[in-house]
Image 1 (tube, helix red, strand yellow):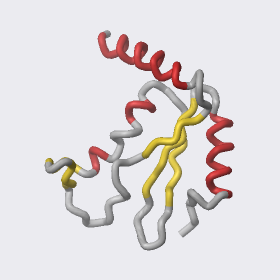
Image 2 (tube, rainbow, N blue to C red):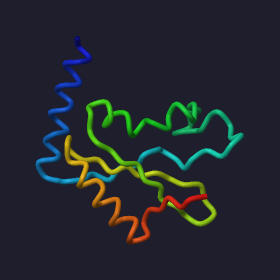
Image 3 (cartoon, rainbow, N blue to C red):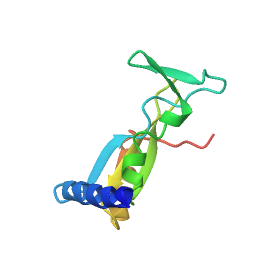
Image 4 (cartoon, helix red, strand yellow):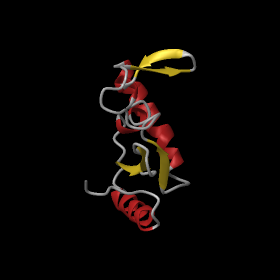
Length: 114
């Protein structure tokens, strides 16, 4: 019951943000995609954390309150992709698609077929 109360409170706090902006741009992951065979841990502030379990650290606080999100890869030559997420208010998915299309047309994000 306490978790549901928190979720309701948190959703209301985040809804206030969307009174002033249409779309948020935030990191999807804290670091680029780990290569196959990479070590199981990553040092963060001098502390080893499990790499895979921390990949969703930036998406979970937004998705658990039901916000529509698109994650798009930022591709840099010679590097593994780093994702950014576009976040909108509930039922404003069209704004996400418009921003994603604009970023793709500008060459900022890309999801080329391999």
